[in-house]
Image 1 (cartoon, rainbow, N blue to C red):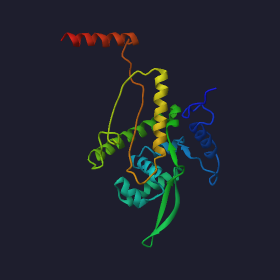
Image 2 (cartoon, rainbow, N blue to C red):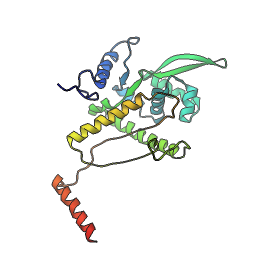
Image 3 (cartoon, rainbow, N blue to C red):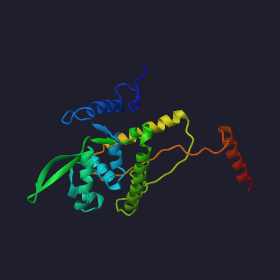
Image 4 (cartoon, rainbow, N blue to C red):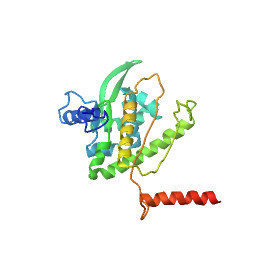
Length: 241
């Protein structure tokens, strides 16, 4: 029998399935027990907290480079440390961020913060229709952050808009993938996410990658054969001009 695909959630022993099992165990245990590598954000109060662009960016930065002090976070997100304490307290209060100890810098005590697990994931909250309002708020926040990242990136001397080490790009595609193709797309997205989650070497420059996938309106009365005939007709008209 063929081995299950490593990114197939239904595959016994797959990383995604293991992470989900760990989440169900770790999220139901009292604090102090063994931690999961992935924490799935499912509580409504946590989702509401992440509607804030600043708090969402704090989570992203802590996942990528934590533990960090408020001063280090402020430098990364372009804010004053005093402007972050309220957001950090909110994240600690809902259980998404924890204090990871402290250090003394120039005789001053700095608290270090980290996420409650190395990976913070949101997409499972989509399965509950009751979370729709919060998910819309979070994706709106994400798109604002995407725009901010791109504006910064396009002005960066480190930007590479072409080549095999390209780190500046954008795309929006509308298509009609078959079920088999959609499965492949989701597998590739999961693989890309895994590559990024495991890219923790601080010697290299950080990279932001965000995506949103959603069904869109189908043309009235459209069918597969109708779309094909329309394309062929367009090609004939183009050739005749």
